[in-house]
Figure 1 (tube, rainbow, N blue to C red):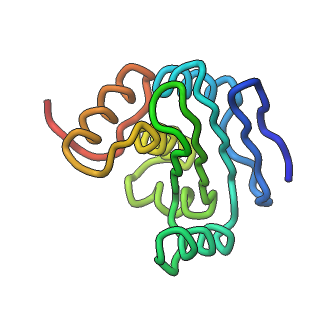
Figure 2 (cartoon, one colour):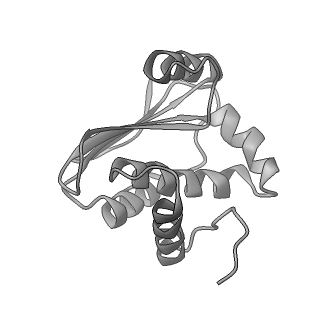
Length: 145
Protein backbone atom coordinates (compact mmCIF):
# COMPACT_ATOMS: atom_id res chain seq x y z
CA UNK A 1 0.00 0.00 0.00
CA UNK A 2 1.30 3.42 -0.97
CA UNK A 3 0.14 6.66 0.61
CA UNK A 4 -0.98 9.46 -1.70
CA UNK A 5 -1.81 11.90 1.10
CA UNK A 6 -2.15 11.70 4.87
CA UNK A 7 -3.33 14.58 7.02
CA UNK A 8 -5.23 14.83 10.26
CA UNK A 9 -8.59 14.22 8.55
CA UNK A 10 -7.81 12.53 5.22
CA UNK A 11 -5.93 9.39 4.27
CA UNK A 12 -5.62 8.39 0.61
CA UNK A 13 -3.85 5.17 -0.32
CA UNK A 14 -3.48 3.02 -3.41
CA UNK A 15 -2.66 -0.60 -4.06
CA UNK A 16 -2.94 -0.52 -7.85
CA UNK A 17 -0.05 -0.34 -10.29
CA UNK A 18 -1.56 2.80 -11.79
CA UNK A 19 -1.04 5.77 -9.48
CA UNK A 20 -4.12 7.99 -9.17
CA UNK A 21 -4.04 11.08 -11.37
CA UNK A 22 -4.82 13.39 -8.47
CA UNK A 23 -3.05 15.44 -5.81
CA UNK A 24 -3.47 15.55 -2.07
CA UNK A 25 -4.18 19.29 -2.24
CA UNK A 26 -7.08 18.65 -4.63
CA UNK A 27 -8.51 15.91 -2.40
CA UNK A 28 -8.29 18.11 0.69
CA UNK A 29 -9.99 21.03 -1.06
CA UNK A 30 -12.90 18.90 -2.30
CA UNK A 31 -13.29 17.14 1.07
CA UNK A 32 -13.24 20.38 3.05
CA UNK A 33 -15.74 22.03 0.66
CA UNK A 34 -18.27 19.19 0.66
CA UNK A 35 -17.77 17.34 3.93
CA UNK A 36 -16.14 20.00 6.09
CA UNK A 37 -12.73 20.31 7.69
CA UNK A 38 -13.61 18.06 10.65
CA UNK A 39 -14.82 15.11 8.58
CA UNK A 40 -12.50 12.07 8.72
CA UNK A 41 -12.15 10.48 5.29
CA UNK A 42 -10.31 7.42 4.03
CA UNK A 43 -9.88 7.00 0.26
CA UNK A 44 -8.53 3.79 -1.23
CA UNK A 45 -7.65 3.29 -4.89
CA UNK A 46 -8.01 -0.40 -5.69
CA UNK A 47 -7.90 -2.80 -8.64
CA UNK A 48 -10.88 -4.47 -10.33
CA UNK A 49 -10.76 -7.71 -8.35
CA UNK A 50 -10.61 -5.91 -4.99
CA UNK A 51 -13.47 -3.62 -6.01
CA UNK A 52 -15.50 -6.61 -7.17
CA UNK A 53 -14.91 -8.29 -3.79
CA UNK A 54 -15.95 -5.16 -1.84
CA UNK A 55 -19.06 -4.70 -4.00
CA UNK A 56 -20.03 -8.37 -3.64
CA UNK A 57 -19.52 -8.35 0.15
CA UNK A 58 -21.20 -5.03 0.85
CA UNK A 59 -23.95 -4.86 -1.77
CA UNK A 60 -24.36 -8.39 -3.08
CA UNK A 61 -23.38 -7.28 -6.60
CA UNK A 62 -20.72 -9.50 -8.15
CA UNK A 63 -18.95 -6.99 -10.41
CA UNK A 64 -16.47 -4.15 -10.13
CA UNK A 65 -17.77 -0.58 -10.10
CA UNK A 66 -15.99 2.74 -10.33
CA UNK A 67 -16.71 4.03 -6.80
CA UNK A 68 -18.21 2.91 -3.51
CA UNK A 69 -18.86 5.19 -0.55
CA UNK A 70 -19.46 4.03 3.01
CA UNK A 71 -20.52 6.57 5.62
CA UNK A 72 -19.44 5.60 9.10
CA UNK A 73 -21.03 8.67 10.67
CA UNK A 74 -23.28 11.02 8.68
CA UNK A 75 -22.86 14.77 8.55
CA UNK A 76 -20.04 17.27 8.23
CA UNK A 77 -18.31 16.13 11.42
CA UNK A 78 -18.66 12.45 10.61
CA UNK A 79 -16.43 9.87 9.00
CA UNK A 80 -16.48 7.73 5.90
CA UNK A 81 -14.63 5.62 3.39
CA UNK A 82 -14.43 5.83 -0.39
CA UNK A 83 -13.09 3.08 -2.66
CA UNK A 84 -12.22 3.90 -6.25
CA UNK A 85 -11.30 1.43 -8.98
CA UNK A 86 -8.72 3.12 -11.20
CA UNK A 87 -9.31 0.68 -14.08
CA UNK A 88 -13.04 1.44 -14.10
CA UNK A 89 -12.35 5.19 -13.96
CA UNK A 90 -10.24 4.85 -17.11
CA UNK A 91 -12.82 2.78 -18.99
CA UNK A 92 -15.86 4.83 -17.88
CA UNK A 93 -14.25 8.17 -18.67
CA UNK A 94 -14.50 7.26 -22.36
CA UNK A 95 -18.27 6.78 -21.97
CA UNK A 96 -18.50 10.45 -21.00
CA UNK A 97 -16.02 11.62 -23.66
CA UNK A 98 -13.82 12.78 -20.79
CA UNK A 99 -10.33 12.14 -19.53
CA UNK A 100 -9.70 9.77 -16.62
CA UNK A 101 -8.47 12.71 -14.50
CA UNK A 102 -11.60 14.80 -15.12
CA UNK A 103 -13.90 11.85 -14.53
CA UNK A 104 -12.03 11.01 -11.32
CA UNK A 105 -12.44 14.58 -10.09
CA UNK A 106 -16.21 14.28 -10.64
CA UNK A 107 -16.27 10.89 -8.88
CA UNK A 108 -14.87 12.46 -5.71
CA UNK A 109 -17.79 14.87 -5.67
CA UNK A 110 -20.22 12.00 -6.34
CA UNK A 111 -18.78 9.84 -3.56
CA UNK A 112 -18.71 12.65 -1.04
CA UNK A 113 -22.33 13.59 -1.72
CA UNK A 114 -23.16 9.95 -0.94
CA UNK A 115 -21.26 10.33 2.34
CA UNK A 116 -23.58 13.21 3.23
CA UNK A 117 -26.39 10.64 3.14
CA UNK A 118 -27.84 11.18 -0.34
CA UNK A 119 -28.90 8.48 -2.79
CA UNK A 120 -29.12 8.80 -6.57
CA UNK A 121 -31.88 11.14 -7.64
CA UNK A 122 -32.83 14.77 -8.16
CA UNK A 123 -31.42 16.07 -4.86
CA UNK A 124 -28.10 14.32 -5.37
CA UNK A 125 -27.86 15.58 -8.97
CA UNK A 126 -28.55 19.11 -7.76
CA UNK A 127 -25.81 18.91 -5.12
CA UNK A 128 -23.33 17.43 -7.59
CA UNK A 129 -24.00 20.28 -10.03
CA UNK A 130 -23.60 22.82 -7.23
CA UNK A 131 -20.27 21.41 -6.01
CA UNK A 132 -18.77 20.74 -9.44
CA UNK A 133 -19.54 24.32 -10.43
CA UNK A 134 -18.11 25.71 -7.19
CA UNK A 135 -14.94 23.59 -7.46
CA UNK A 136 -14.51 24.09 -11.25
CA UNK A 137 -14.92 20.37 -11.94
CA UNK A 138 -16.47 19.04 -15.12
CA UNK A 139 -19.97 17.60 -14.55
CA UNK A 140 -19.98 14.65 -16.99
CA UNK A 141 -23.74 14.40 -17.61
CA UNK A 142 -25.30 16.68 -20.17
CA UNK A 143 -27.87 19.03 -18.73
CA UNK A 144 -29.44 22.38 -19.43
CA UNK A 145 -29.86 25.27 -17.05
